Image (cartoon, rainbow, N blue to C red; front, side, top):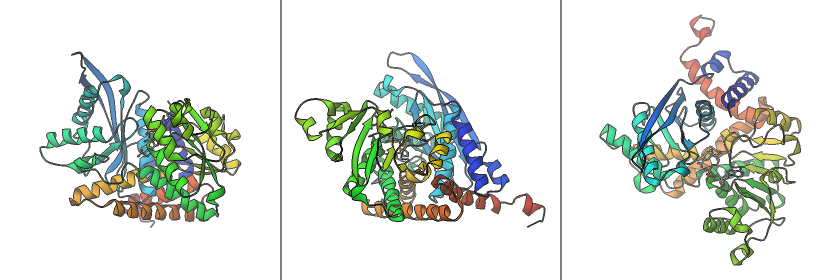
Length: 428
Ligand code: NAD
C-alpha cells in the first residue's frame, strides 16, 4: 500500500497523456491542493487518553467543493488518503457532479473501540477538521468502517462548533438527521445501471451471463440483488471468511438473510434448516477470482487483481465496484488479453451521486421521494456511461482510459477557463 499514491499518479499521467490532456492540467493534478494532518485525543472508557493520527485531503476543487468519504481503518496512511482523494476528483468529474475530490481517514482499528469511544473519536475528528470542511468547501461522507450514525455525530459536532444547523456539511447521514432516501442502496444500484448499459452496448444476453462477486457488503449485496432480479446468474459470492459457489446461481436474498443472521457467509456453511436454503460448494477468495464466469465483480478491497493473478482471470468483463481493485500492472495484462475492465470511477459513482442529491436536498430544505432519487440516479449513471462509451469509441483503448478522458476534459475546461500559458502569452 505504500506506493498507492505513486500508482494513482502514474496512472493519471499515462491516461492523461494518452487522452491528449495538456501537461499544465496534469501538473495541476499531481499533488493535492491541501492536506490537513491531526492527532485526535480520545478519552478511553478506562479514563486514559489515546491519540489517533487523522487526515483530510482536499485534492482538487476546480469544479466545485471537494467531496469524499472518511475511512476508519488501521491501514489508513497519508498516501492512501491522497490516492483516494485523487480518485474522487476523477470520479466526480466523470459523472459530471459539481464537485472536486477529497478524502479523509483515521488510523484506528474501530473493532477494538467501544461504541462510546467511537462516538468520541468521530467528534474529535470533526473538531480537528471543522475549519477545513464545510458545505461550500469540502463535504465528507462514509467510507470503510464509517456509517450513517458516525456521519450523524460528525454533523452534530460541526453544528455545535458553528452554532447553527448545517446538515449539508456531511452526507450519508441517518434519514432522521437529513439523510437521503435511497443512499444505502445507491452504490450497488449505480453499478447495476452501468452493467445494464454495458449489456445493451455489447449485446450481452443476461440469462446466459454468469457472475462471481467478491465482497458481500453494502455495495456488493445491492448490485448482486439487482443483477439477479434482472436475470443474471450469480454463481459465486464471498466475504472475508470465504466463498460459496453454485452452478445454477444463488437466490441473493436467501444468502443475505443467512449472512444477516450469522453476521458472516461462514454461517451458510453450517448444517441445518437455514443452510438448506442455500445449497452450495465452498471456495477460497483466490479461487473465486479465477472462476470461469462472464462477469467478475470485485466489491471488497483495493489491490485484489494484481500481476500475480491477472493472467489467470477467466472473466471477460470486470465490474469494479470496489475502489482500486485492479493494480496498474494487472490492468496492462488484462488489456492485452482484451478483458473489459469497467472502472471504479464510473461503476461505483452511484454512492457519491446520491450523496450529491442529499446535499442538494439539505440546501433546498426539501426532501425528495425515493422514486425521484432512483430516477435521477439512473439518468445520471446512464448519461455518464454514454459519455464514457463514446470516448472509448473515439479516442481511448480501454474503459478506464475513456472514463479518465471524460473526467480530465471537464477538469481541463475548468482550468483553461482561468487561463493557461497559451492564453497569457497571447498564442491563443
Ligand atoms: P462493506 O464493509 O459493507 O463490505 C465489504 C465486504 O467485503 C464485506 O462483506 C467483507 O466481509 C468483504 N471482504 C473484506 N475483505 C475481503 C476479502 N479479502 N475477500 C472477500 N471479501 C472481503 O463495504 P462497502 O461499503 O460495500 O464497500 C466495498 C467497496 O466498495 C470498498 O472498496 C469501498 O471503497 C467501495 N465503495 C463503497 C461505496 C458505498 O457507498 N458503500 C461507494 C463507493 C465505493
